[in-house]
Amino acid sequence: MTAPLIGLSTRRWPLAMLGAAIPAAYEDGFFDMGISDYPAAVAAAGGVAVHLSRDADLGFLLDHLDGLIMTGGADVSPARYGSPHPELVGPTEPERDAWEEALYRGAVDRDIPVLGICRGFQLINVINGGSLVEDVARDEGDGHPRFDRDRHEHGHEVRTVAGTLASELYGDSVSVNSLHHQIVRAVAEGLTVSGRAPDGSVEILELPGKEVFCVQWHPESLDHDPALTWLVSAAARFAAS
Image (cartoon, rainbow, N blue to C red; front, side, top):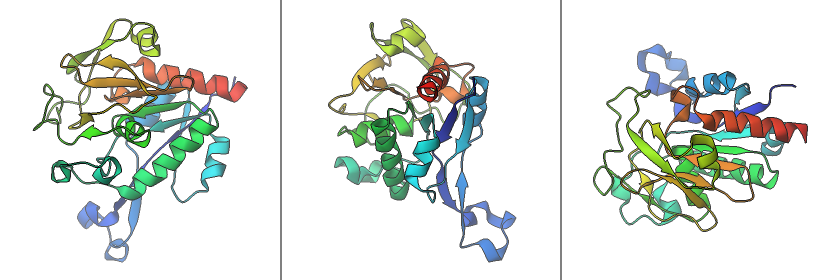
């Protein structure tokens, strides 16, 4: 069987961020960036990953993909969920928000399996009508931001809900890393909570009736996280259908 093709959403940053490495002629340009952990994890799970460009025709991309990963990155624009404390939100990328919403909606309409990771988890909740805690470090939660630790380090447990896809993949619980400063405040109507951290923070969301699975942690930086195996398997089934 041919390995399924998994699309990865990317960030777009000014080339000037690279400083002296960029010649003056390119200082007003941009680059599309994707962290290599994602394609490496997809490959380890048996898939083939491709970084997506927002300049490509959306329908063409979706017609050729078997699966989609909504990757991590900048905070979701607070205007999208009516945040009362936008001053607590970090740098945002509104154009990316809009592009990824179109990717997500197109994938769901086509029944393409979707894995939301960290920012992707949060954006999918917001797209469906949910909201976020702007800064868990100052608001609520239990030590979720661990940006000073190795990304491969496990930070806390997540307890799953019986009868969900999460429980099928992880059993009763899973130990995860923790690289986020925001958490879900209000869960979007239609999404199901299938895993929580010890402090009650939502860590796993599912969309019943669709192949959509979302985790707050970064499975691509952990060894053989079942979320990647699930996505590749679901994408292979989609390709075969």
